[in-house]
Length: 233
Image (cartoon, rainbow, N blue to C red):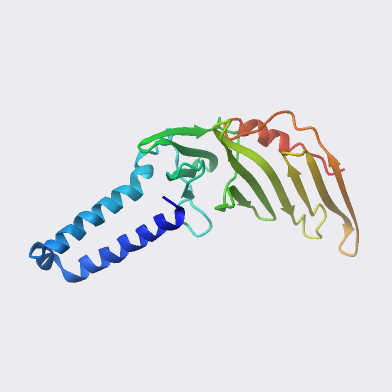
C-alpha cells in the first residue's frame, strides 16, 4: 500500500472516530452499521500502531522529543516493501542514540542501532523525503545535518551526507559551513576568521577526502568520529 493511501486510511479512521464519539454509545448498540464501523476503527488503530508496539528500548532509554516537544519518531516505508518501518531517536541522560525497526514481512521486524557514543546531542527534527532520511541537530550556535538512505544490499541505513553550519562566537570568529558527500568523498568548507567585529577574512575550499569505509547506522559511532575530525584548513 502506498504512503498516500495509508495516510488516507488514517484520515478516515480519525473521521469515523469523531462520528462514533458524536453519535454516542446508545446509537452504536442499536445500529448494525455503526457496530461494523467500530470494528473497522479498531482494526485501523491496530494496523497503524503495530510498529510502535514492537519497539523495545534499551534499558534506561526513552524516546526523545523534537523542538516542538513531540516524539522524535518517524514511520515510513524506508526499504520499499510497502510496509511501514520506524526510525526513532532515543536518549538516556541527554545522550542520544538512533534505533530503527525495518520490516522483514507483514509482522516481522529487525532492529537496527549503533553502539552508544560518549556524547551525541541529537536531534531537533527528523524528516524523510525522496528516500533520504535527514536528522537535524540544532545547538546554541550551530546546525548539523545527517543524511541517511536505506541500502537494500547492506540491509541497513547508509550515511550518505553530512552538513554543518556554525555561527562562531559573538564576533562570528569560527563561523562557517561544512559539506561532506560520503558517496563521492567530496568535501567542501568555508570558515570566517575575525580579529574583532570590524576585521575578518573568509576562506573556502573543495577537495577529495578518502572515506575509510562505508558508514551505516550500525557503525555510526565510527562515522561520528570521522566526521568530527574533518579539517577546515
